[in-house]
Amino acid sequence: MPYAVTHILIPIITLDLIRDHYMKHKHAWTNKYIFAAGVGGILPDVINVFVILQGLFTGVTTNFRPYTHNILFLLIFIFAAEIFRRKKSDHKYALALGFGVGTHLILDLIILGGVNLFYPFSSYLYAINLFDIVPIGIRGLLGMDVAVLLLWLWHEEKEHKISGFF
Ligand SMILES: [Zn+2]
Image (tube, rainbow, N blue to C red):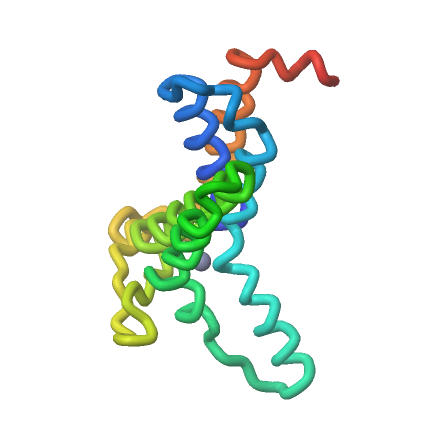
């Protein structure tokens, strides 16, 4: 359960890096797909909005995380990409969203919170909880947001001279 900034920036940065350094057809993956990867990166946690609504209206809260933190949820996007194979743009949107969801699950699995990988077939929570092993706690998560954001800004300045926009 790293913070939103990390969840959004990690897929944006990794897809951007893969595009800039490893893709043959760089221009086929325009920034709108990179943006979609960022949206995918936070998508599994959007379900938490229901927790707020449920709390406000019923006074109780349910843990909705398992519904979006599993392999089946990720497969929806891979399946969609397959369906849209002939519609290049939708195909890439589905892949980018799936990429974001994938990085979200990996981050939650490794860092904090864990994922119910095989939900609804099994409720077992897979978790490495790196932040329990490395004792930096919640401040460490905040620091991670800052570090990720600064590294990304540095990369964007070096590769794309973004200071020109300001
Ligand atoms: Zn999550």
